[in-house]
Length: 139
Image (cartoon, rainbow, N blue to C red; front, side, top):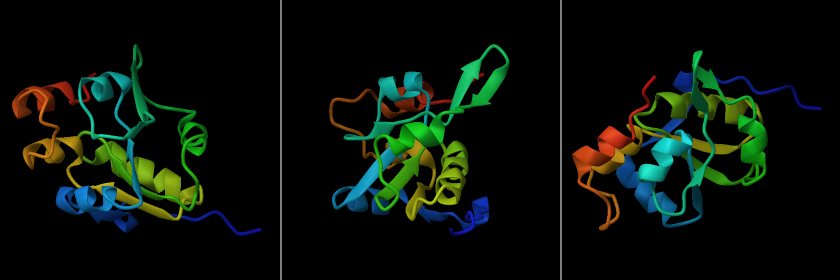
């Protein structure tokens, strides 16, 4: 049996939003790790939402079921682009996924805020500044 992989945040592959948009047009999946509240306000088309963290009365708490929930929708050999609001949760989620054996994982640099800044939101979405306010991860 193979030893578990070890990964640091610095080792996570990163793609910019323009590259991510192009890759999502091929065989890549987008895993949005923001909270359900953030995701429901606006998200990338065809994204899967599995929150990496939740906001509780105790503060921000890592989702203990994150890897299990991801395994229900994505395979370990799928090509996955991970995104959050600005990149922090995304890179931590990537580390966990890589260490769990997912082979093709990249973090979207700047997260959904960078996607909005690049003007890549759907035509029917709200104005960019309103979307960025909605997608903030707040205590």
